[in-house]
Length: 428
Image (tube, rainbow, N blue to C red; front, side, top):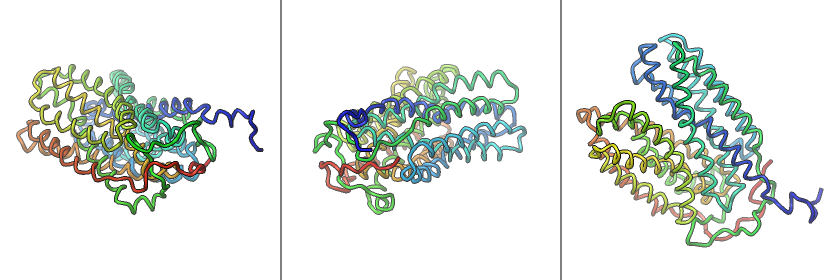
C-alpha cells in the first residue's frame, strides 16, 4: 500500500528507534557477562584441582571463537535481518552456559570448554554483532554515539554479573551449578531484547540529515560487500588498529587485580573492588570515545586512545600509590572500551551499512587475536622478568606507540562527503 501524507510511518520514519537501543543494551548486558569469568577461576581451581591455565581455558576459547559467530552471523544478518541471528546466537550462548553446569569432575574440563567456550563463544559472536550493525542503519546521524551505546552494555555486563555470580558461588559447594541460573537469566534477557530487533524500511532516511563533508567523521560514497571490503587495504588496516588496541587494553584487564596488589601493595579485597569499578570505565569508554569520534574524526580518536594507553602503561609499573594506579588503569580501560565503541561506526563509514554485519563481523577476528596475544605476551614477560610488571607494561606501551603508525595512513576507500543512494539500507 502506498504511503500518504498522513501515514505516521512516513511522517515519522525514526519513530521507535530509541526503543531498539534499549533492547540492544539489554542483549549486550547478558553477553557481557563473559568478562566476569575471573570470579570462577579460584573456585574451579579449588573444587577440581585445576591449574590457573586450565581454569582460564574456557574463557580463552570463548574469546577465541567469537569471530566465528560474528562472521557467520554478520553475513546471515545482512540477508535475513537482525532478529533471527540475535535470537539464534543468544540461545546458543545461553544454552552453552546452562550445559556448562553439567561439569562434575576434574576430568571434564573438555565439557566446560565445549559448552561455555565453543558454544558460548560462537553464540556470543553472532548475537554481539547484530545490534551494532542494526543500530548503525537506524542512526546514520549519530553513528558513533549509538554504536558506542550499543556496545557499552557489553562492557557493563560483567559489572552486574560478577557480584551475582560471586554470591551464587558462595552458596554452593558444586561451583559449575551456578552456570544454570545464570544461563537462564541470559536467555530471558536475550529473548526479550532480540524479539524487538528489526532493520529500518527500504529507503529509510533521517529527516534533515545530510552526511558531513569535513571537519568531523564523514562517510564514504560507496557500499562494499564483504568480498570487496576484503580486497581493500583499509579493511586490514582497521582490523590491525582494533587488534592492537585490544591487545594493549586486555593486557591490563587480564592482570588488573594481581598488578594492583603487586605494584601498590593493596589487599586482595581492595584490588577486587578496584577491578569492579574499572569495569564501569570499560563500558563508559565505549560511549565517550565513540561520541568523541563523531566530532574529531575516527582516526583522530584512535590516535588519542593509543597515545593515552602508551603514556599510562609507561607510568603504571611505578604507580605505587593506589590512587594513581587506579586513575591510570581507568584511563586504559576507557581507551580499551573506546576501540569497541568506535570501530563499528568506522567500518560503517568506510564500507557502508547494508553489509555492516558481515564486514564488521569479520573484523571481530581482531578481538580474538588481541584477546589472546595481549594476556599471553604480558604473562610470559612477567615470568621472564622475575615476576615484575615493569618489563611487560613497558613493552605494551611501546606496542601502543608503534600502533600509532596505522591511523594516519588509513584513508577512506571511497570519496567522502556525498550522500549515499536513498536505497542504501535494505532488508526486513
